[in-house]
Length: 501
Image (tube, rainbow, N blue to C red; front, side, top):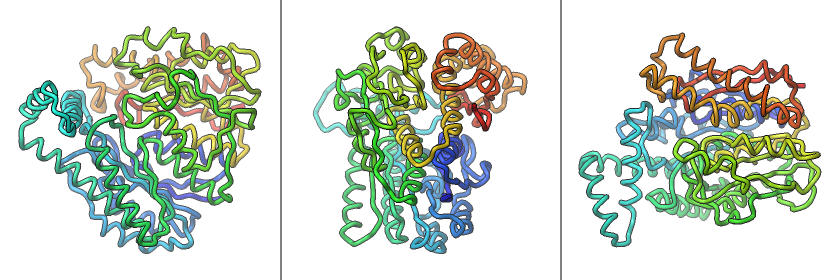
């Protein structure tokens, strides 16, 4: 059994729980530092301590996967804070040189930050949106009077000094990322992935990515063995690189998947998410290269069904429900193929449409062995591809069903039904929905009760046939537990029993 040491971006479930579940599916072992060592919403990790953790434990592992943002800034939230200090790449590299990277395979990732600042309370959300719009407009080259007027308004709103700080922040992070790429090449790591986080089809991130790609070509010309990849996302990186490491340790064979993209019109090459700069088609191609996936359009052992939806992509919290619920355009009338389905639901941002899994469960002979539909397009797509890769490596059906049960509870039920109810309750209580750590323990418990009731209502009602088609029994579904690891409504951690039969 291969063993992989993982230092993820921070302590959220997508970075800690998800890779652990994928390791179980792929029948490999992931070693994580104690969760309290990782960055949170209001506290940064000690990046040098994490680097020392790598140096101390790498020799007992076959591979190491780590986040440069965790080591440099202490976490993703902290990497988005212009005023925050950071560790030097050189001081981190000095510690990592203690590892024999010729024996231990090294994989790492870093992020080009999103256009908005960190949001750790509801009061900051308006500034986040203003900063995001400012960056998009500031990068435009065409002379557009309306855009110029809006840019001047935003500049006045933010203040010249603040705008300068924001520009310096992006230059700082890009410079750090370039230095991290050079350090990764010097150390002799196998691969570095650069994630362009939660951005848009316009903005400075596109220029920053081009500059970093040019830097990767310079490093390649210098003879480094480190390979580089670039794509949108961030929260999927720990899963993707864990799967890549596990696959390469086991021989790096290509995995064949039957791929179905629905609806066929607009095509995947025409479909863009709310927070990505590239199309769904580009994403599928990038994932096939990164994880050595081969797509077939005929029966294969695993069938990947990607449901994308309509343009512009709706957001559950920002778009009227009739735009994405009860939309027959999103429901495939017939599934071609006999293999169990792995469903990636991109029908809207921040959750999975419950009607899709319910619709598929009603179709004859359609069995479901996986579902992912959280956050942005490439968060969901990357975790899905990583899970499918691990399914090829291992035969742990119980681990597959455990992760599926947790995704149903989180992506389908909490994000699409329970979260709005929790938000409504907290707002009535006058509590910040993006940071309720100071709430009374009874108020926190009521948030969990609301989430749990939403889950029970679903599994005892419209979700019952879905559980049957997922081969998950009702007893296991009732045993699922929820927690809020960051004390905010955005993330919930659904934890299923270890064995789901």
